[in-house]
Length: 365
Image (cartoon, rainbow, N blue to C red; front, side):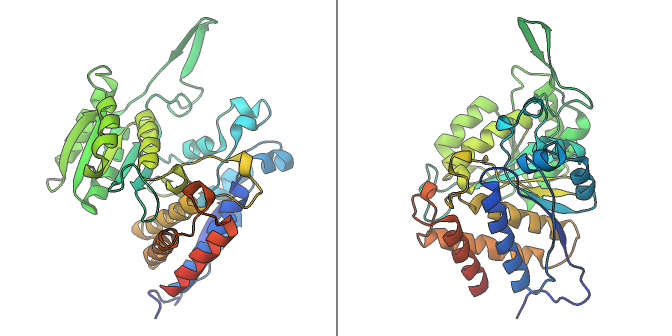
């Protein structure tokens, strides 16, 4: 029996942006798995909205992120973004904000949520790790995200480069609420990561506001760590942590570290979300060296899509999406545990073989 009834439910509309490199392979693979899971729980078929981005968009529209793509995304609740290879774009695009960064900024996707959990069958430095890094995604010390117009980096002379970091109470409050709400659904612990011993006004404000928000969640334990100590603790005892909340740059670095410690960036999922939009995006890059060879690992994007489906349900977009997400997550985990994995995880499966195995397990659940 399906866990959702189709009834008069509308067809979910999800944007599909292939991106560059292996995105041309892992995004279609993820689409197949999502379609299978949605059908398996009795939801109406997904209405996919393919949109140009990256090299394809440069060829067809003269820019890697056309305005028509952004306008179309505004009409959708969620979308899947493949990795982009912006370092290989011709100028002036190479020096501009990346397509993903443009989307995050346009739609104020302030929460980058990155789980790091070891999967059965994948060798991990920290096999007991099961944490989530909640990264503030719009401010901090990243020059491409912290200004309304222009960048936060500048050079007053050819020999002097400067950067401005921005931290506001409003942004700290909303990311802190995101972290505490998530912790309530997990093991009820939030660790605030900062560098207030040196950056006392900026990351000190981040720490203090997170602690203020924490008073509204008396059932959640709160502590804090300096970012350098946190990096060491993740290596030494990463299995102890639950939800980690931090600013933009620290979150980027720590989430990549946690992804590798828990197995590989190839299994590191993430979503970028606001109150009204969510974008599934794997933490890894476009891997142009293996593009088109049917060797790419779609695990991270499949798990990112599962997170997106859960977000759709938790944000009131309908029922049954969380059940579809659970099928995807279980099928991916059982596939990897069975020994079917791509070469980056020590297996022999191609992208298509791995996808076929996941689809079969989605249907068998």
